[in-house]
Length: 180
Image (cartoon, rainbow, N blue to C red; front, side, top):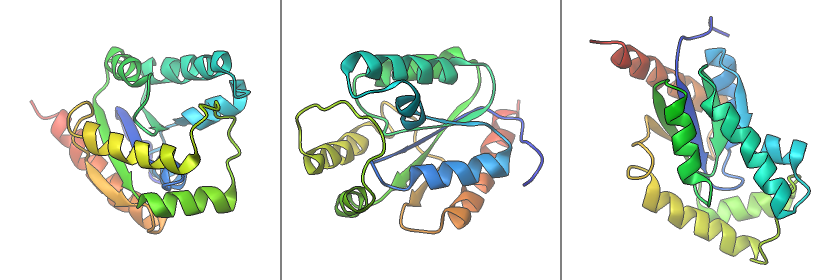
């Protein structure tokens, strides 16, 4: 691990089961920044109900708003997107996005093989529809609602190699952010 980088908020976006968590752990280890994900908050506060989903998001949004560097992870879509952008802005720190791209069919295969250990709310929609919907939402919002990504990572590649590439991009981003 390198010494902690002075930094900002790094948001890792990607589909369900795309490989975000592995990348986040590796990037957090390389940068020295704490990691937080919506699924961690769901595990802590969720039970599948709408009220607990709101509680999990409240916790995640509070982490996004803290004025300290962090690697944050979520799909990047859904009803809390605008509140997440506001929380990141309120942190006062520079923000950047890493995008994990994995074909929807691979995300679905992974989700079915490993199962979902997260208490997602049941919206009454089949998982394949959810994953395909997230893919469409990412296509629509990355570069518009969210900043253009520092880099796009193939979610099928080794997280350590992807993290090394991502950290190089983060270093360049931070150097640029500090240039007058």
